[in-house]
Image 1 (cartoon, rainbow, N blue to C red):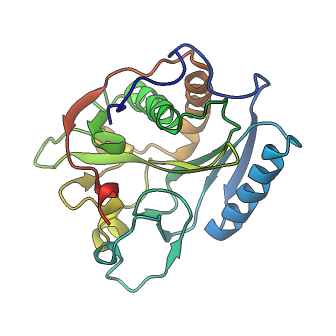
Image 2 (tube, one colour):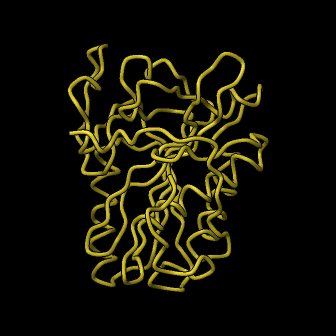
Length: 247
């Protein structure tokens, strides 16, 4: 999505309040509620200055989560439970084969949430293109990272974002589809978007791409993007209505 205004900070300037190295936590597979409670505790401690910035790396067991903009028609038709989360956006699915990262970052003031989201997207686009999906980019009006329509498939999201900023500290984050199933998306209106699809890196590249292959490159790209070493660029290939503006 094209920012509605110029960012508060130059593209080559860090948006982190601290310049200390980010601590990386490899958590493996963690229940969604457990991970939510854990990151909330870390975010509160970060706001008080008790710890430094963190990035949590994990996978979740299969679960639907609904952001604050979720509509009734988005909800699953297969009867599976939904966790209502305090992040932005609408409904999505998490499960094995999907690389999830939760940055717990204290943002520099004045806080620029739009720029923060753009930098997360930039890191994802960089990694997705580097592995071989060269035309991945943005759709103006919609968050996340997208792959243009091809081979009979519509424009499809390969990475989703959902964040919360409280007391100047970020929570929640991003999910990159590596080699997860797409079956569970068929039972929801993913991210509230009915006119587009969902894809994985494995589907796009024609071979198995596990989360382990992308963890280290994505951490590096996130660090670079937040620090301003990887500048946000125009990677838009289309535009569409923003589903979060409804309701």
